[in-house]
Image (cartoon, rainbow, N blue to C red):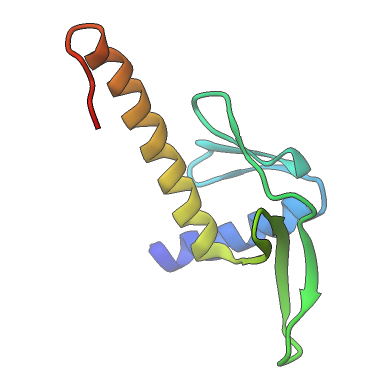
Length: 106
């Protein structure tokens, strides 16, 4: 099932580059075209200037602008980014709850 999710994520990248709205997974991750991926906390994972290019081997690839230059993105990497974003949201929310009772330290 994981390779199928990666394949679906690859199609999601193509939809984002074409500014199409779609969903990923079992309709639980909303993709809002070039706006990015809408996370449950209301923030977006964005991929600025996402576009298709051709790599050295002549294969299609997708790239976007990041703080440190141009990054490649593909299905597996998109799934990883979403998982990390969800984990950050969960940790952040739990820290707020814990902070209401205890002092939070790093």
